[in-house]
Length: 374
Image (cartoon, rainbow, N blue to C red; front, side, top):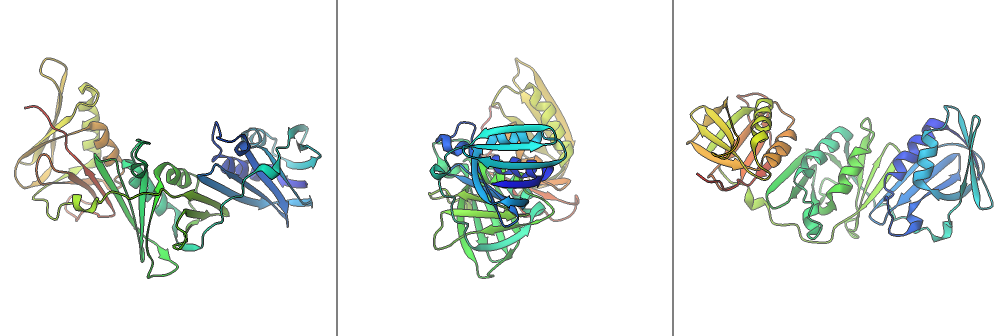
């Protein structure tokens, strides 16, 4: 292999591709990044059995060929190269990287031992990257960290015609993001379950100026593929039954309060300063005010009152402050509508643009209240 390539493009491609390489791979061969020079391009790929990454960039290919080298080392080297052309060449068991007056020699890994990358499924549809990124950040709020219950570490992704619905739950809360996209087939109706951390990783690495194409094979439902700006990722799906969560949303909420989101977040953070670990924040809704409080009578206490627009009877609810902050922070609108039935049943949070407008149903956050002493 003998290749001439732009240094910045190479560094960017290597960094993006090698991000899927684990710090301690299950198999040492998975520490490698595969390079293939062919037809005026340098193709890069990496795999960790759960997620794969493929990228290609333009290159002057004098001699086609393949090479497998340590991915993280290559990433460190390429990001430190001078802003000139970089030359890659293999000879026997080594690859030489030269740029300006810098030269590095890397040992090649046995290419024949590298596993075959999964076949990318057929296209299912596409959406603009900012919409996808926002939906993933909202849906993954409630992803569980309990590895012993794999289905709860996942995001259920439902494709229904021109709608995509992403749902996650850790049993204490539920987050759901819905967006409109362009399906290949408007009659599409299928559901997948993908690990939340993998989905987050894909969303973080997108070029937000380009659309995201989602690939999925209904007849062989083991992978979800993502294509964006010439980069292709695949994520292994979780095999399991996602909990039946739709029944958790109430048909009617007799008590509703509209609150300025930033004021509420700031008040929660202040009041939570005195809360012991895992202790709840109490919210007393009365008239057109909500009073937040935390702390015990014989210890530090805090209290703050906010003006709200409320319909319904007075109510007191208590929440885990971290769960409250995480859910509210995912709302993009300036106002939040809290919808309640009783002090112990899940509370729904939605964003809305104006204090007197309807709530948006694009993001729905359900949070189960905590029990509290009188």
